[in-house]
Image 1 (cartoon, rainbow, N blue to C red):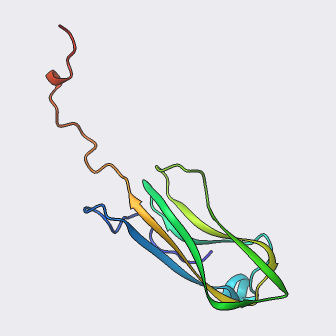
Image 2 (image 1 turned 45 degrees about the vertical axis):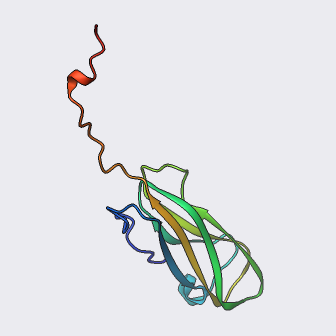
Image 3 (image 1 turned 120 degrees about the vertical axis):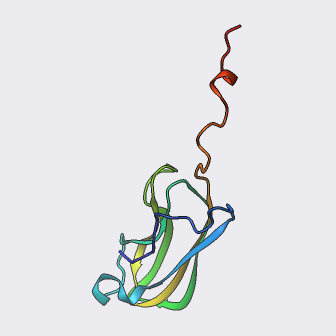
Length: 129
């Protein structure tokens, strides 16, 4: 796995702005400098808990070469559970790579509850007449 960063914090707090995280992956350095192979899963971005991924993508920044033409997918490491940290991964569907760099990015929004305690008094909740 590649060192994607810190999934424990949101850089947007307290303003709740949309923000971008990114990582450049040198495919030649994967698997002890052997490159990638079919079915490899590369964890490239950490996603903090209580975060919505608005968009994610991958940009080829150095030409990819290998024994065959690889195909890639972006995926999450788990289900859509906002209460747990997650990762965005590259799944190598087919082919192998020996050279190439890709930039993976995600547009994120912090949806954690910063005011999860009620400011109302108990009498405001009483329903007895």
